[in-house]
Length: 324
Image (cartoon, rainbow, N blue to C red):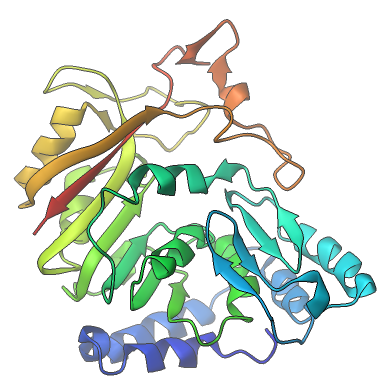
């Protein structure tokens, strides 16, 4: 990883912050993660990281396309090789990214989501931020652009950790970190000013317990930004798919907007406000050369895109802000 010690960097970032009291807990969490192989491809991804150019980047920008390095930072031969190495980390789900002028056109245009919410969320300047279910880290960079002082993303998907590591090895000075674990692994720190959780709630067997765990990470007078699937339904209505929803097996509860508001209030959140709602489009989620599997268009009824292939309402997502 260009000799980059992500564990040490994370520890140093925790010192002199509200997370310092939990330093030993983080040490145990990381030690446990390192002791196990979490994916059959993990050793390959680790080896591929060593093949990235050992160079300093002259350009970085955390705008709609997270851009790191330019074509002037590497030779044309190195750039050609780099593209093939990046393809070893497919599928690329969240982005877009540009590394040394190589555009990684990810399945999700995550910039669309950020554009919809960025002017409605609390001010992130100088804040400690946690992103639960951060994917490969695209939104971590956007949070940094918005002025957050310390950003920690967590996600148990091993591939996402290595995708993030590709970019992080060139951005050692940036206080953006990734811990490849689920929320259940973290102690209840109460140390974050703002917690994001986008695209996770509907994957949980017990949404109320999960919301309580999110709340346990937020400091007094802090904020939660949660984005999830909802249905247009009655205040007490919840969709529980029988087997799959849009071909996803692990979708358990999709509430109406008012039911989600009730859930949030039930676990102790205040000032709950829905800040945006939209149907996921096939421009926002689609197959690309960097994610060649089936995508949203394949999961919708071909004769009626208002329905999933199983006959449920098509994906409708909403973002809520709540305070502690």
